[in-house]
Image (cartoon, rainbow, N blue to C red; front, side, top):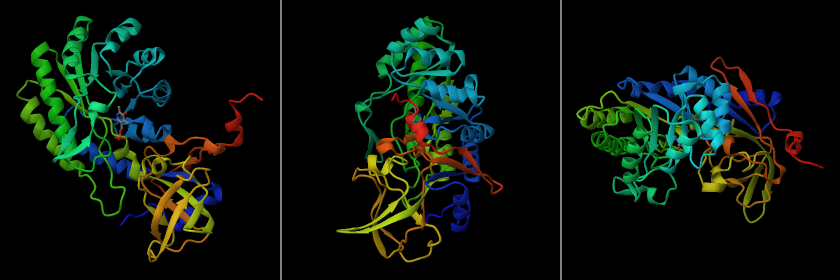
Length: 412
Ligand SMILES: *Cc1c(COP(=O)(O)O)cnc(C)c1O
């Protein structure tokens, strides 16, 4: 069973001050999970998680993660600016961008961020802009299909990212000629994986490639970046990934491949987003409308502009009706927002307790790629983001948009 991290009473208290819809994040859950990750990879001296800022770009969240020893993974100018304003500097920032504008590389350079190149043409492009730093990484795209346990996980051959294997060899040599001294290797081959086997399999590919490149070019390997992709159980009953097991399995592959290759000093980096935040954030919304036509609908005060994953990917987000946690699931509803788009549904044919207007719905696992993907279609405004502190207090960490914000960029 999925349990909300607040009760109906807490939600009603919060709602008095901050009207729904709002995002609520659970500081305790975020910290405990970050510590589990750190522990799982503590065998690696240089281990660092670079939280993927795009998943939950909020300074208060980034500062919590910073206190837990994390850096940040940025991929745009404003993400770099946010990292800077939160006090991240130098090798606390990984810059894993693609189709990168000049000014983005310039800022990454002046922050001394670790730059992870997405394309071989970016070697000379970066060189002409800011020169080649001593430490630099390249993103690998092996092409083909990425399979795990005889199942196709994803399709790198269709993905726009990274260098081919041949380009890595060529690129490392070019980078050495331009003054690079220490190298990193990165790949992101499958998203939201729900198997403990993803990281170890990816690690094997990257470790073997790193060892080959080291052998071929003599390039010292400073780090291997396993990037994001560890998933979470969105559906009740799904088994969560076991991060301790994953860390240990990556260690075994590291000792098998990296240590004998003379690369035992390399750091392991991760750029997890979803795994770090998704379960520890919820979209809290109130039922404001009941409609019975060919189907039964519950209309809520949030919409796909607040959380687009169901509309965009058909993603499942579990819903708990607060105060009815133990009530029988004997009513079938579509739970919808008010956009003039029929895909604006948080749930379709979902079995839920009987819902009345005024009931508060807790939409689970929205802490990553949730608020961040919000938009203003139909003139809908972005909600507030709130943080449930460890001491039980609720702090506003982003105010809700107002109509003035919506009109701010327009000329009349
Ligand atoms: C999106 C992204 C991540 C995070 O992915 P998750 O699925 O949230 O773990 C990490 N690195 C890069 C380069 C990304 O684009």
